Length: 74
View 1: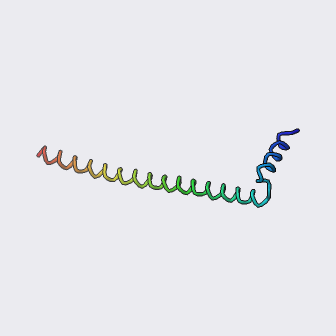
View 2: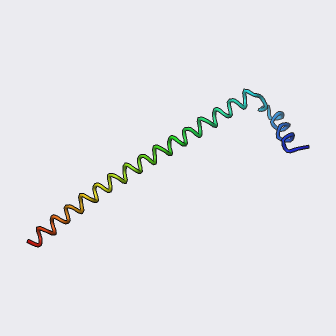
View 3: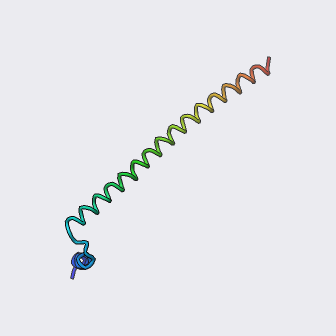
């Protein structure tokens, strides 16, 4: 008895061996994975935006320090 036969017999006993059940399972899997990828992409976009904002703030701070150093030297 092959592993496939064992799996199919288990699915028949469990009552989940029908085209409708497979369709539901694959739809649920598709939507779950899609939601996970969308969440991951949104998180990456948020991280990139945060990094850019921090870089702008750091550059502004560097300019402020340079101006104060120049004023202190005069």
